[in-house]
Image 1 (cartoon, rainbow, N blue to C red):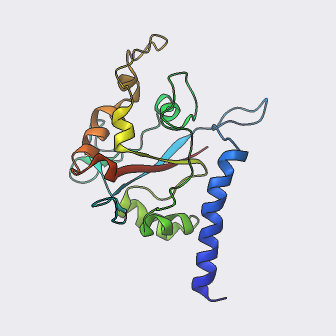
Image 2 (cartoon, rainbow, N blue to C red; image 1 turned 180 degrees about the horizontal axis):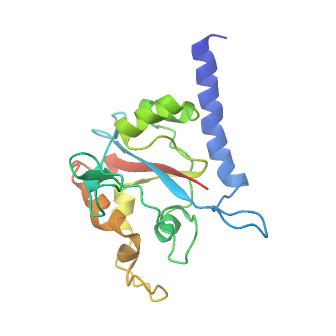
Image 3 (cartoon, rainbow, N blue to C red; image 1 turned 180 degrees about the vertical axis):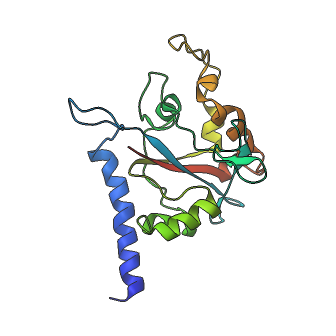
Length: 206
């Protein structure tokens, strides 16, 4: 088999494993009984297309820095959103669930994933390519589990105004979501076009 054939087969196996793992591992950033849970982080990319018949492509979306120059900031005072917010993770994909509901259970990577992000999935363990992906697309890889995607339509349809009486530090889902809600979602909307043509594709690590 040619090198290209090996790469194609490896990618197919990787994507198929991603789809199967959600039905078997049902990972929730959890660990075995009696062990302390490890930190969980999101690995998120943004994709956009020009219309339903057009291919997806990744775009690097940034938000203003609000936490000082050392918080994932770019030189122009903006940063990629990659906050560790377990309450939000529960809403996006039932990871570290907190009882606020979930937009959708993990779906796996989309079958029409952009060629660029297919390469990210294939080159998961290539550190040099991970550095390139982080510079160009805002993240280095898809993480380890709970892979999924959500369109801007789905994100906007979620009731972010719903009250959260059980939380002491936020009164609504939007408040609990932090800068994902206050800065990142507006940045996605600012891409313009049909909200069906903008989506986030993501996974998590432990």
